Length: 128
Image (cartoon, rainbow, N blue to C red; front, side, top):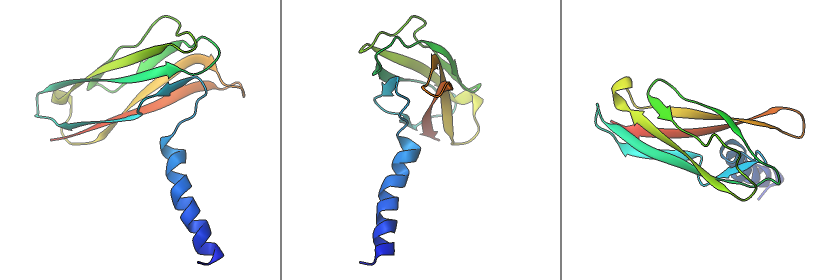
């Protein structure tokens, strides 16, 4: 195996982890992608994202942003280090005409070590 092919092999292994594993240093999700499966037009589907505060400070979720087809709830109180929580959501298929991947954006009040706001991108998809 040439040096170039070894390098390409390593990149094919590492690159997907940069796109799918978001290390934000505050909360860790059991999964960042949920597949709702087959959904009948007009159906409402409930699901949730579970997480743990993996930091050594309290975490506060300031906002969870969704599209018109999704209603989400989130903990409004501080999440202590080591505590778990959930972001339940309901997908209303009446609001969509085609299959797609949908983003749920989680904004923390916490600031990262570089002084930036922490935003976590979660996704779900479905099939008609």
